[in-house]
Amino acid sequence: MKKWIVLFVLLCSATLLQAQQFKVKVTGITDGDTFTAINRDKLQIRFRMNAIDAPERKQAFSSVSTQALKDMIHGKTVTVTVHSRDPWGRYVVTVRAGRIKDVSAEMLRLGLAWHYKKYDKTPHYAELEEQAREQRLGLWQDPNPVAPWDFR
Image (cartoon, rainbow, N blue to C red):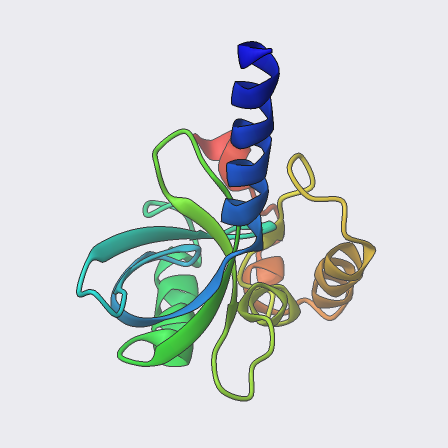
């Protein structure tokens, strides 16, 4: 019986974590898919954008991708919806910033990140990446772009 209670509590807390939505103030941008923010209790939290993988620091378009994310969210209060936590303890989130309803989608639309299909199967994100690729936007200007997961 105790095992079932423990299992139930764990499942409920995982569901609550994934359903959380709250506001944070963005204080730092690490790269095109990772940022730091403070919550209402002034706790500093690291976040990873859901569904995308931006160029690594030594890759082409890394600085452009990082700057674009900075322009969209740095210094702003944004709404994050938590999906999970990654192995590094970062919250994997969807971000809403003012008129931008989904910052991950915007990064894909601009061609400044790859759709991280290994972890996300959302057709809309795949379509946004494909459109940016066809229009040769952002990193898709490079004749031979290398995905971050292959670069690492």
